Length: 496
Image (tube, rainbow, N blue to C red):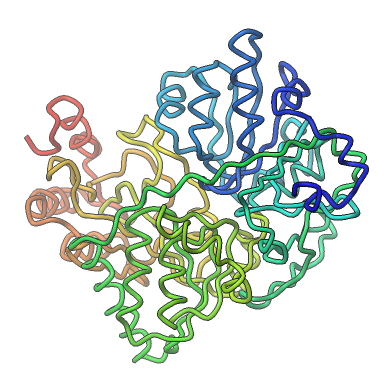
């Protein structure tokens, strides 16, 4: 059966076990692995590497597209394999190691990693480990449920290990569009003119001589951990739908809006799901991750086409969608993340970007990454790529956390990932703040009135009033600006 998937017959001689393939990875190497938000990661070789490292200690720099599934980061951390990790992660064990200083984590915009590699600004990839559904006669690697950085890793690496995953359907072939930008300073324009533009080839072009080993595997992707919509996320979706309906009435948007982007996670997925119950139709998507809501919208007849870099689905959706992928393929495309997240394309298409905030402040600055200003959660991911370049940059979050002990709206964020200059709309279950065209003092009034939980509104209003008395373009009481975070650390609540 696997012989049908390895269409270059010379490569049949390079089939080895995962343990044998892992021996190609040496201490001190930089390794590029497939995988983007728990989808399409190489699964067998990383585990074999972790097992080997328990008896033969070694350290590597690991680059991926985004987060890995199947507890791979956990296994590599526990085997003390990881010296450096980039550009994104979501594993609790790895997160603890990062925050303890045991693993050096480089948090990058997801569009930037391969740009830095291509120009030699960071250490080159020694070996790439890529999951595939098949290999073409010419050695082209056909990815599975994600592209991420796989194409550039394979092209730039000295050697490539390919994992042929027999559980991934061969019908995935033709879903991908692999396009690699030309080199600076004379780079040609990226010719994506619409979400359904196909500009590349359906495989990663690699000379078969570079493929040092082929490993046959049978492992599913990990399912996503998103929760179904609740009362609060439905309220957030409702506020956003009402706002966009008003934009249509003003003639700024049509009933098909503009291409949608949504970050990974429960809130963003729920907000997109909410579009099912709106008058909008013939929607399109130009995003990073295609989640459950993408297929819900397609099934509801609302979404005509979706472009992304990976498919990350709940267990139920995965069991239904992946075996039936041929039925959806004409309405989907998976691209390298430097194309799905490219500023040029985002700006051209006029994306409506919807991303999730950990917290935001009264002036519209957003923290997406650091708890308490110091402890990494997951990483900035692609939110910055879209926030800076979108037609409309929207951030959503619930107004409180930890049963009300934490306000997601604060006087000053403890860490800034997206400055006020890149944020247009803020939404909580309480309401929506349209910050476009407002000066900082006006922004604060709008945020406090529309987004803050009633339990915190009076305290924030008092802070802002006293800051105004002191003056400034962006009024603050510097000695108090982070007091809520200090109180949380000391007492477990932002307001004692």
